[in-house]
Length: 372
Image (cartoon, rainbow, N blue to C red; front, side):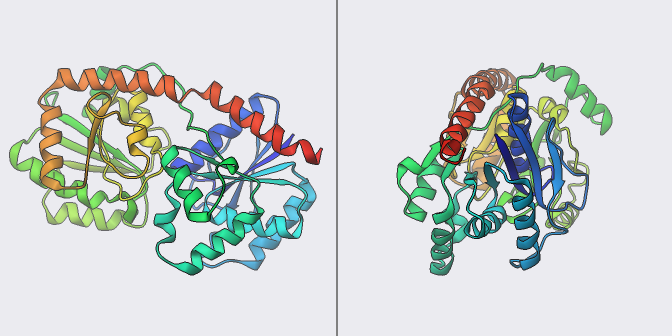
């Protein structure tokens, strides 16, 4: 089977990393796969092991581009894939139009978020996406909340949507060694406690909220440190907010790093405050490192945090409540350990990669049986 995994850019971001991991699993199972970025990335390009890694167009456009459409169409006609999986909103726009022009492949869309939030109340956007999704043969969704939302938003039958969870790959964790490495790196004391967050510096990740939380925490404890890893359009704004509040000694922004496993393991608590989420992979990564998470109940977050068992799920974003919750965990290391170990057990069991890849291959075989 010839498969194209299409991402917006081959960048180190949650959705793209998950698509690259899926691609590597597919190639390991004997499939011929191209891992393709719709646009080039400005930094280090993400690659999928065992696959052909390419970029279709040049750099990202703000508006729909006839040139990028032509470039994708030319690639599809030349490569003749059996199936294209579109991972992201830009990819589905172009892939759906290409299928209208050259309908000789099956089109799958991987839904990772809450579509209704992104479309807002715009009737035009909803009509546009309903029209585009007429070309989609099937949708895979990372969680049940996201699946229900896209079905209702686009008026799709349940039979067209399959929930296939994210895959996580078990690793050996030594939290004490990881904490020692990070504390030495930033010249922190052994008594300091570490909060960790990761993601794109964008409005939906809401990192400014965490800065406000740290401002309150530092009034009650001088031994709490926060690391926010990632990059994005709001990075300078967040850095300025940190400076204005005098928190430079307490909050570190290391920027982009491809491997965050040491940070996840070093953290006492993973903190998240997103405005919208599908099924957040960062919480799964934290769980894999036996680090409990605190997050607000949005989208499919409840599908990855079992409140009081693997972490703490807050009903809403309130600085005072968030501060109280952080202090409760930080001041109870035995509870952190208990929640973290439960998180690791839950993630490795419920997000099993072998089960997920089997589901994907069975779905792809069923869809492409009619075109072979």
